[in-house]
Image (cartoon, rainbow, N blue to C red; front, side):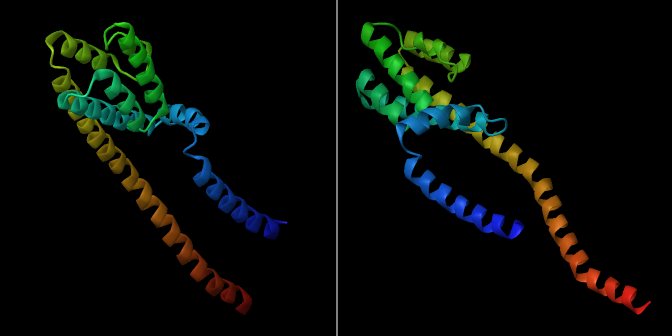
Length: 186
């Protein structure tokens, strides 16, 4: 029974990976997977910080280049790489189209931390929105770098333990026949 399970598992894994490559970019799948990615225990904050950094940097660059804000929000939402930010960007775009401020609808979305909302509000009040967006992006770039360094320092001991386990099992596998020979001699 175990001999049949391994090939079936390998075939199932190959079929799943091929199917995943075909459907992972569809909106329905991304609307389900992207919120889960942001809620993952260790990597969720990392994904969130990367998406926010990309979103704010692109929006700041577009505003600095003179792109109208409604068009910039439409483009930036799509380039953020996360459907949660796409949805939030569409809501912000509708709010701005109605004449509301940019920072007010951001409070309704949990993907935007209060610090981002406050800095955008200050940027709106002072007329330096692009500068504030670049400062937010720089902050999140530093946070991503610090998070990846912390994850790397956590992964190193695990890798040492895994390699030690592999080498230990190889040594045991090499010496077990020798011990069996001694048992047969007695």
